[in-house]
Length: 115
Image 1 (cartoon, rainbow, N blue to C red):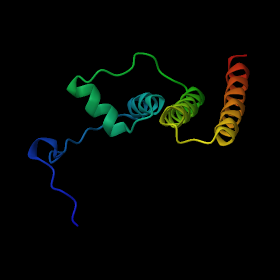
Image 2: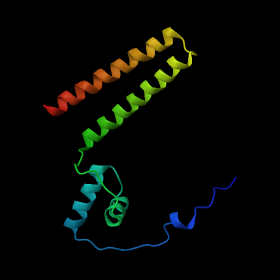
Image 3: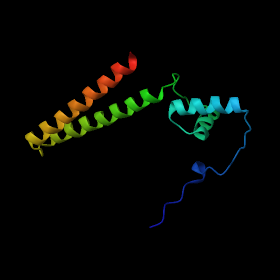
Image 4: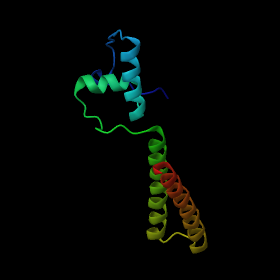
């Protein structure tokens, strides 16, 4: 089955070429990297008025945030299992122990990073 066609409003058919000095490009590239998005997406968002986060995030902090998001996702899945009644208490307990280990490891990374 073929991929569905995009509507005309979401097509990115127009291209704009911009020249930057090396310094300007490094600034834009660094800002995009801090936000975890591509340079093109950063420029697109800045020029169309889409609000970007005010604070730049370091690469290490971004990795920690992603790991915490994954742990949160795991907690949500375990909660759903517990509420559905289709779970095995021993398995749930083992999964919670794994999550506890992950949270402890992340806590140590955060403490080491802040010091």
